[in-house]
Length: 86
Length: 175
Image (cartoon, rainbow over all chains, first blue to last red; front, top):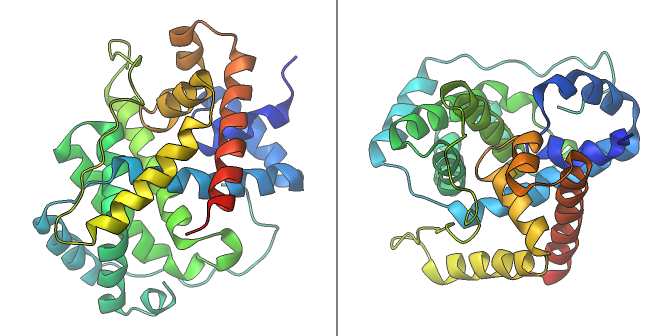
């Protein structure tokens, strides 16, 4: 029987098999230590992105700047429940 | 990010300039298609703009927040368009080849890359390969288990251990 805590790493790098997601996310809502571990793993995974760094085409910058001109921003969410893991 | 959340488009453009090589880079690596990578990168930045008021330092660093979003979108996209079965993953880590941008400070970039590469070298080969297959190839734990001929539980543990070890090393390594 694989312990659910063992899934934190796979979850943080989007490698959990999709059928396992609902159960793991439900667990994350209740388990502080898994929540902290996942948050740390997100930071670590973000550091990995230097290994694949690649400058996008200049046209993409213009396209994005233009796209946000017409995109409304969402307001700060009113806190009604503990933050979810995702 | 706080200025972006208040609609400051110049601040948002600056955020793009400081993060886009890493965000676009991981999306491109997972998707392997420059065209799809541009589309998904745009989706990520538009979402960042929309959601910027929802970011708080309590959630972690801005880069981690963005990289997590980007990685998830890229993985969702790659799984919806390909079955992954034929890609050779044996040299997944060795084939990572970050492009040094000549315009920006290439010395600092090489230092950043070296620091992470050295940390990766401290992992066992299986930890390193499983993590690379998950993060950079967008594979599921089951696909990795099949490819490496390991039990599912072992793959989960290797990836968890890899991230813990890497996290410890990078935290201790300094700037």
